[in-house]
Image 1 (spheres, helix red, strand yellow):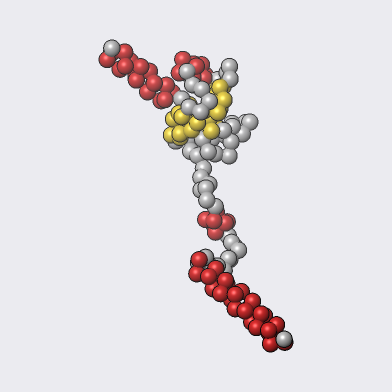
Image 2 (spheres, helix red, strand yellow):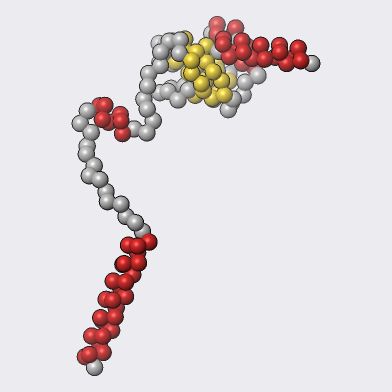
Length: 142
């Protein structure tokens, strides 16, 4: 009898070993590279998926309209905060802005990288001009 128990134990060990071998063949585990902690800010930023970049006055940016209110429009441009069109820029482009809805993609120019409230001021003048020109050419085709 002791021999039978020993055989069962040997068979269990053999089955476990075969299953481990099958799992190793099915799942190719790549060796993990040793992870090194970043020592400088450049190394830390290099690890980020999204690249951090600064905006410059006069730069053209693309964004998605997030909210349109009675006197301002907020545009997600992928920066630290939404860009905003307000004041004279809003009034000059009111006809264009009235047709915008949340989710619309727009092109804007950076008017000021940060005002006293920390907002990025944008201008839609170029986008509004393009919109007006497109409407004009569409009317001429009819």
